[in-house]
Length: 109
Length: 230
Image 1 (cartoon, rainbow over the protein chains, first blue to last red):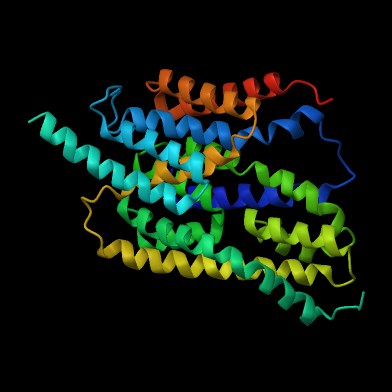
Image 2 (cartoon, each protein chain N blue to C red; image 1 turned 60 degrees about the vertical axis):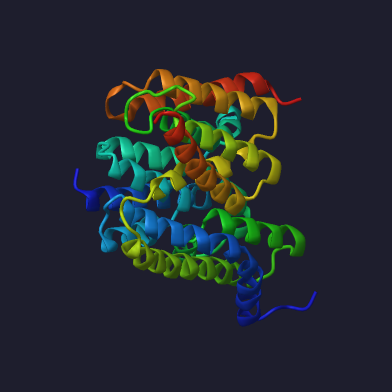
């Protein structure tokens, strides 16, 4: 699919989602389970992207203490949990990645 | 309460949105730089910010485009990630009743996480004035402008950064920074853990369909653990 077509449809779909209830209020009734499930959507989708991404940095599975992305990701999760700060989490994760890459480089020499 | 004029409402929205930009501008910069690092063109990156106009889904779409994911899967992921906007839509809808379709369309386009947060807090606190939609417009346009400008700056900066930098690692880091603070109860933690593990097990599935399967199972587990609200 052409990238421009993807962007255009993605924009329309996002816009339609935002317009949905503003336009249709009182005309439809949403089931309760659907309303409650919305809160889990970002958490589940992003976790399903994060975990496999960290565990397979180059496309194939690399579940090992020698995987610097996995270790740096764990550091970032810890920092995000303690600080709830986006910028700190990103900086800590990048610094951790650098350190682990250097350390593992030394160990594996 | 004194009746506010349209102009006063508008600028009141702009003022309340302004502090939020501190968190938004770095994201816009990052998005622009990352889009370039996964080899999107400047024009494509800017178009994503103005046409899709939804931060986290743009990050994910850029990453998926960079890794050669099929268009259909990207669209499904964008839809799923932006599904929370339906909740915002339902929540502001009572305050926008009676407005013309034109206003509803315009304000829906501007209904981002940050504009929603500021506007709904204002409506809940101040009640519904005659000119309340101007407040929403002020907050929404402020955020929109900041997002467009910071994306453009990020694209410019990204073009100067050597391509061998591990900038793409910033993507999972931003997701971690968004997800971890949202894990406030057992149900959310379970949804995240299950989605992560299933995503790992389904890594070999074609066109990243494992991602959708993992997310669906995670959401289901979250719902089951939460149980019926008392």
